[in-house]
Length: 336
Image (cartoon, rainbow, N blue to C red):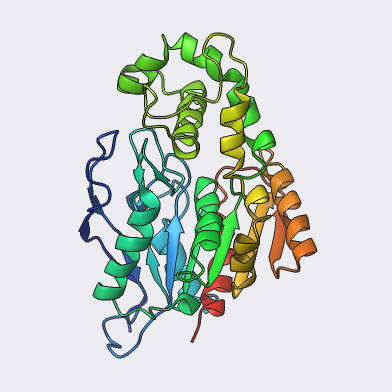
């Protein structure tokens, strides 16, 4: 039996992403990690874990070497070899957009990324690999916007997922996003206006923290407040003349906030059905997401939804080492 897994990279031709407004490709690589022994044990079927990246990332980027560290496949190899993690198939979707991300939602401004994940990627994996193709053996996890995506997809699709792990996920939007929203008008003005930011973003130099916070805020707006009738396909969360918050658009953002979505009985029941609901966040998160995690956990407790919550002494970035906690828990929970 081999001591290292194998990564396949089939190209998935998407029907639902065709014709998306930004013009992003509908043909995408789909990295699929197959555990050690996959070839030697042809009768064995495996649980599936879907790994979602944060804003600015994509599935193929998880294959890259990290300086002084492991790639994701190397991390999984180590966990399996040590016996900490049961063998599993790990899928790494590419839901990148021209604006840096999709929040894994369907949006007329970005594309149908929830449908891409649920209706195309998962069936493709079940057709082409020896999966255990039931929700009870399929989990979803991610960090930051990927953690948001994992939690929301678990709420939306309990028929597809039986376990969720959310690392530092976007939630409690008034604390997590408001700082960047308050600077959005100034940043857009500094770059020469919204049209340049949206249509000529490649020319903007340097790609500084200001660029990152501007683009991420606009991408969130495209995911949370799409409007096909608006000039750029979505409604801005701030007034371009004054910079003030547009309260009506902001309420549309808040409807996507997990700490509010859990008030919906259907979403609460979806989380209650999970074999594992794991949430963690750094106690020094730069986006204040530990506050949102605590708010969500209080609601889960009040609703009687089983979960596991951990805070750790770190910030928001470079916390992929926390997969050492979630991957073993997920693989154990999803065993037949």
